[in-house]
Image (cartoon, rainbow, N blue to C red; front, side, top):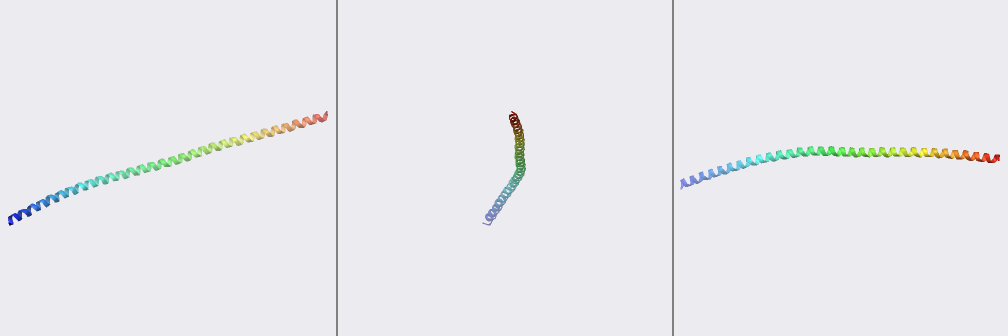
Length: 116
């Protein structure tokens, strides 16, 4: 009958309206969740940038520290080389003095032998 059809139509409209409200609520919930996730992602990206900057800084310090260590080692090795070269020069000078003294002594010995 018309009355039943009208009632069925009204029930269907009410059901559609309830379903639309449920869909709208679900959409609002999803939008909120999406915004929250976007905020989390933005916070994570920001934290990652900070951590990357710290890592880059640490790497730069490690590199410069490594370079500093290399420079210190080079300086130490250069100083050791300089000391070694100086010691070699002193030894050569002492050897030359000893050689000169020996030559002088031998000359004196020969002169003395010739006098005899």
